Amino acid sequence: MQNDNHDATHTDKDVTQLAEEVRKAIEQGGDVENAVRNLTLKTMHSNGLDIESLKQIATAVMEGAQAGAQQKITHATGQSQTARSQITQAVSGLDGAFAQLAGASKLALEEAAGKAKQFSDSDLAKARADLEDLEDVFLDTLKQTASATQGLIAETLQDLLTHAQHNGTAVGRQIKDTLAVLAHQVASAGRAQFEAGVKLTQMTADLLYKISTGVLSGITSQTDRDKK
Image 1 (cartoon, rainbow, N blue to C red):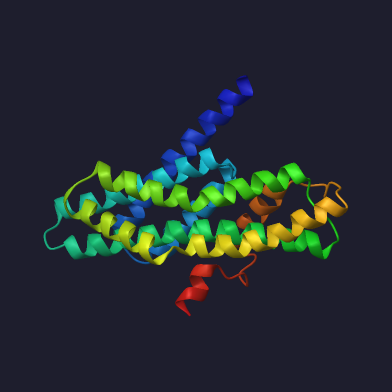
Image 2: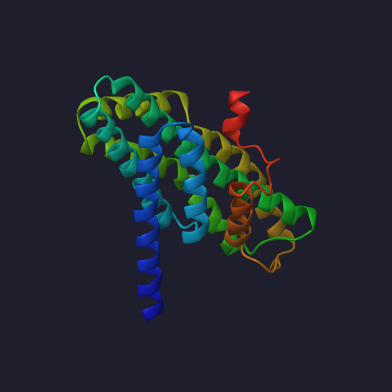
């Protein structure tokens, strides 16, 4: 129980720090999308990849973006369009980080398949369930943040939500690719199941860390491919 409390405290500290770092990124300007994506990826690696942790991370990102944008609007005249642009970049950064999470899962599955290994069927079932929930976490967080604020920020977030619902998201597109690879792993596990020696979530987290620190700079997320 003490370990659970320690882990919860560690997670709370990390997500609070994430919100503060996102707020600072908004206030400082620059490449907000890239900053938010990298901050989100690093926090994912630290806190685990279960859905509850990801909900907390997404909420922290949106709280930080909202606070940073509100600060600009309140304390500087003529900053409305800048604030709107930076909120949009922050949302894109969060979407991109979630897409890279799904992409890292795909890479982990492909890497295991290349070594003739399968994960346990329970591990694969959980991975599938989490992946299917991932886009909903992103959209629900966007919706809840839009409902909890007002004015320009609320309008911007609602516009982004409507666009995402009508046109799809980077994470949604990447999830489809990953689920196709996962389906193949499930079929393989049914024929000859054995433990790969490491959990899919751990492999994914390790790959995410390498992506966020630039070790695996050659990995492109769905977001990058869409832009090209």
